[in-house]
Structure formats: C-alpha cells, structure tokens
Length: 155
Image (cartoon, rainbow, N blue to C red):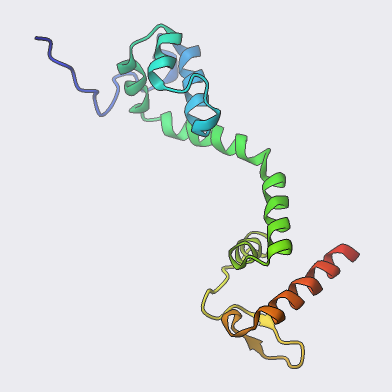
C-alpha cells in the first residue's frame, strides 16, 4: 500500500529561477488566471498530463509564495482588456431594464462613490431634496431613467 505524500505548505523553491519547468509554470499561472469556462484543457489533471508532470507538482506550484500574486497580475491583465465591454453591458442593462443593481453598480464604478442602498440619492425634480429609491414608483423610476438616457445620448 502506497502512502500519499502531502503537498507542503511552502515549496522549497521560492523563486522562479529555481523551477525545473519554468515555461510550464508560466503557462499554469496563465491557465489558473482564466475563468474555468475558458480553460483548455478543462482540468488540472489533464494539464499536468499535457505538461508531462505530476498533479502534485501543480499543487505544489500553487503553494509557492509568489504564485497567487502572479495569478492576480494575469487575471487583472485579462480583465482590463474586457472592461469596456462589461461597462457597455452594464450600461445597456441599467438603461433598458432599469435594474436597480445595475444602476447602483454603474454609479459606484463610474462615480467612484458607494451607493447607499437605504437612502439612494436621487434628485427630486420638483425640489432640491433627495428621495430614497424605494420610495419612488415604478413610473417615476422609468421616467428618470429615460431622462438620464436622453442626457447621455445628447453627449
């Protein structure tokens, strides 16, 4: 009966230069950074086989002290290229459906401020006071969304 070894908490190899499979390691970082639906091959087991290394090697790489920082850099790089498309999808959803979560998220991203769920600051047309979003009727919300849409289409 064979005894399965545990993956160490810290790899003895702390820097990339000490890796035996540097190119595979870099490809593994890139693979982990992708959403699962975009990964090819689909599983870590298949990837290990493709690289010609054991699955335990990939698990050990995950425990390297620089691994997750490198993954985060790749993930951000991958995501930044797609941000304009996501923002357009968010804008379209907020305008077409008036989905409050989309409106809130847009406000937080574009305006750079936290959108308070309980007292959403929406300027009242008839006065300089603010109304909580949950106090507005569906018709009023739709009217205000249309006003915002018209405003941005003029620009």
